[in-house]
Length: 177
Image (cartoon, rainbow, N blue to C red; front, side, top):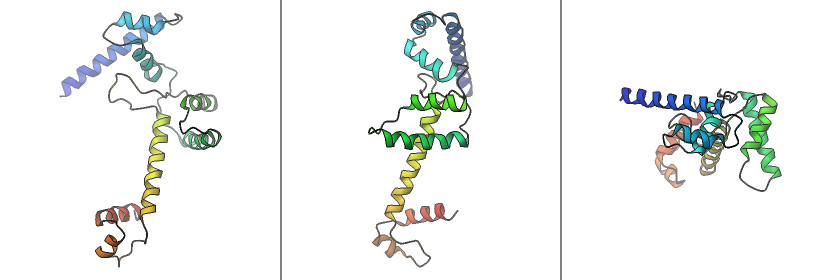
């Protein structure tokens, strides 16, 4: 299994090097990703090559974890954006350009087309999705809980409130860590 994984990683590195060299070669051409796709072959479309470049290979992209200032900025920016826009969709490209000008770090919003397992989506969107789903889960749990769990609660009281014993045990572990 390890040998197969190394072979696949080596293949991705070879393709990445070919893309980097070709981007430098065709950097001023109007349809450079189409030309690179034809030059490299290997069954990758120009869109896949473009996304791979913009998400991972471009040296100006910052791949570091988000720091606390950036996380707080994302939270505030999304709140402001949702207040000013009627749509539920968030324009991540606007956030990325504003964060680039504020923090001097260019972040990627794209998910990789053919590098399975490296990243699932851009760091900004991933951070916001995790945060909002965690907050939603906590709100759902809080709305389910009628009484506060005490030592005197027994199985009958728990069933009366439509919460099973496993949920109570999990909730108590989470709340009283």
